[in-house]
Image (cartoon, rainbow, N blue to C red; front, side, top):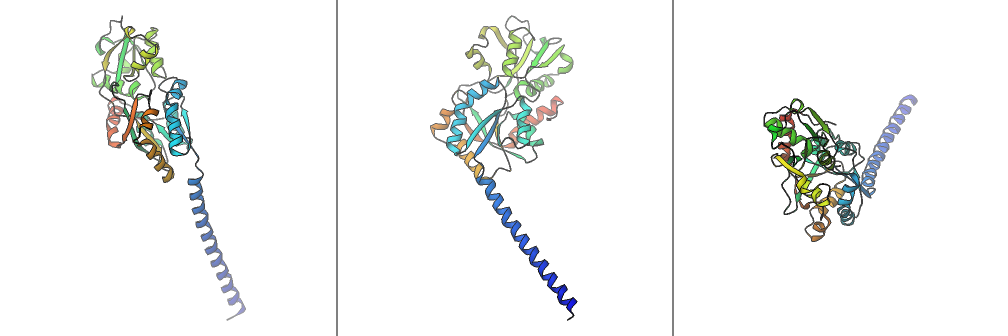
Length: 304
């Protein structure tokens, strides 16, 4: 064989070895990086919907957040979005790992979160609490006693992405044959359920749509007196809140979260006192098809 042939063969061997070594190095690096990504997660950020003033939301869930930290061995940090879609956006951008969603936010998240989301439990209301519905409220001295009396009136919804504060309220109106954007002289979004309630109480609007399960707490806290407000219409019952995590979380982190949420001891129940919830059940995506129907019938589309 010529010197040129031998040299060429040596070059090919060297290149082959180089590629092999590089490939092995990348595989080992990828394995190390995957292991590191799991071991490096020491903190979990959980998003909470701003259905009330953010300080009130943080206070209400403080005990539950502490329980999650203790049970998972991770530092759990709560986040309350500026609005409902802010929690979805934070999950989509990787700034959040877990989110306690309302049903409509969950439907939105399934459409827009690039890494994918998975609802692993749903929140079960505490015994004795009212069923989850949209309710139309007005002042007790108002002449409004049903949807038919609301023509030409002003109405406040909470947030465009709110399940009980908007989606199912609008769904109810359309089901009853009313076109919300034409039926009312003014339609506003107040930002939260307590703000909606105050808008009615202070005569800024004639009607407001809020969550049925929020009203008892508002009365108890003194935001409004029971004799100041009346409920004039209720929607169909709404599916339970889903708790969701990003699908790309390491499996061991998911397992820790599941163990905490499905804990059968009294510790979990104690941590939920004051939230209106008692425990968690398994979540099923099909349960939220009613929410998808509410969007469709109302002529709305889940979007950021």
